[in-house]
Length: 104
Image 1 (cartoon, one colour):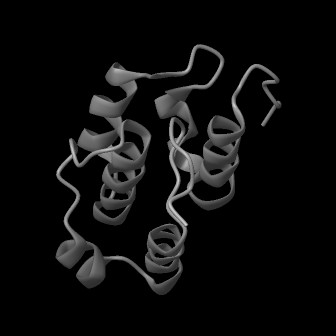
Image 2 (tube, one colour):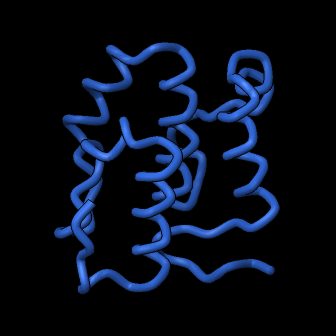
């Protein structure tokens, strides 16, 4: 990913987190304009695998800072593989978002 120097540190951390853990979700975000590409989100959620859809709902919730995409922890635990669950666990232990500070 090309580094956007206009991003805040928390936005840059979020963008790198996406690239490292769920690169298939990069098309859902426009980091230059700092917006969610709503049409891409709707299309992706309609076409994604079950696991990818769960990860997308989690990441989108982190982006907006709330559970506006109906992420379900129980469903995630039952469906996601260990690596995907670890991404969520790591975030729970050190939460961050593109518009917030760490809650340590």
